[in-house]
Amino acid sequence: MSKPYIYVFTGTSGSGRKTTARLALKHTRITHLPSYTDRPPRDKEYPPADYHYLTPEHFDVLSKRHYFSEEVKIDRYRYGVASRELNDALREGRSVYLILNREGADRIRSLYGDKVVRIFLYVEKRLVKERLEAKGMSYEIMNRYLNHYTDEVTYRKECEHVIENVDAERTAAFIRDIVAGYEAGDLEKNQ
Image 1 (cartoon, rainbow, N blue to C red):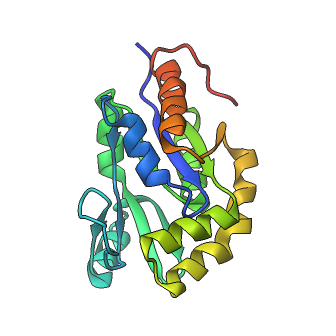
Image 2 (spheres, rainbow, N blue to C red; image 1 turned 30 degrees about the vertical axis):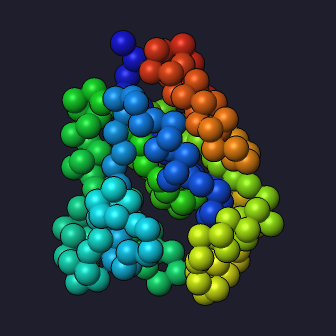
């Protein structure tokens, strides 16, 4: 049996990281560890499936107690992954997946080394805009996503796997193959 892995779905905002990861791994034993955040839920986000939503004060308390393995600030909100949840899963031999931005992915990689497999998803900037408009995102949120695009897309060079996510079903099948290879011990982690 292979060692447990931390599959980190990263990439450009609006590339479908959450949706595609869920689609790809829904019938596997790999569990999603949602991040904690002090931002309010957006339309069509549900706790705790998407995030664990905290007040800024509660996030402060947990942060001061070093509750998070990684903690990042994106625009004016903070996000973090619970150390205990992640470490318990690994200790029990269970692979997990996380949805993180570049900073979070780097932090987890620096802490957990070769247990981390970064899967970078992206779409063209034009398609990001179209997807966000179709979801009815506010102009403010859409503008934030698009402003981060260039910085985010350059991170793909650092990741083990890069996939253009034009078709969610096809991307999910590709991800299932990648993950199955690691879980079976057939794929060796790039160093």
